[in-house]
Length: 249
Image 1 (cartoon, rainbow, N blue to C red):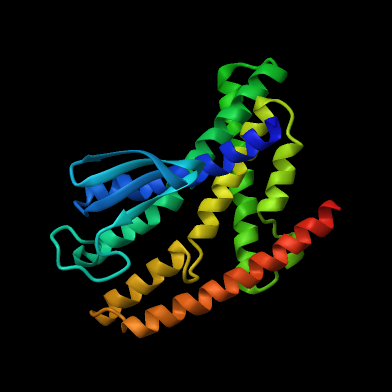
Image 2: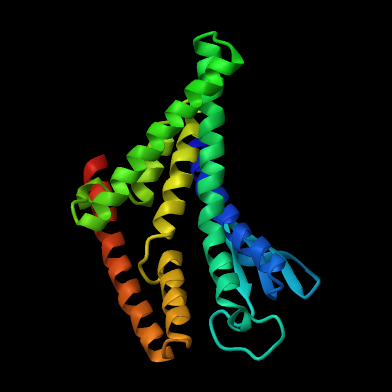
């Protein structure tokens, strides 16, 4: 039961702050947010305020943001498709950036607290050590990203929801759980920024192309790219899931 709660909290919280990043930047950019939902499934509470429907749903796994003019063209004031390319990129990138920033801050605090308590060092020493540890983490993540773009990433090293859930179940104590939370948050943010449609990074790439061409890509091209990308992601997810099961069993 405790393991299930930890899994739901970790995955739900990380998805929630991701969507909240989209939400808050959309509001700052004056883009209309039709819905901001916490959770999925049947609606248990809703309130309309400032043209946004705020909802709480039964299944506490993340949430979602529905922007006016995001999935289809809209002529309404404040629609996403009418916003400048810079604003649209900011809105799309904000979810992943929130995950990365949150993960980095949490990782830094955990390392600092652990070093301060275990080594009985001064606050200044603990802070210095935390910066060194953070620098090493960034370097390792940089190597992993380089492997992706050079095609040398071993697909067997990839982990899906089942593998993540297994790691969560093995955590003991709040510090170890928060450490895993920070690493997964950073990884989730970086993965989302990869230039692959339909990930956020892929959407940003299409907007950059739109900016270069000075006009939107044909709708059919965007739809086809999304369908192809979604198919690849589904196949990859199936493979990773079976690989997770094989590794656990």
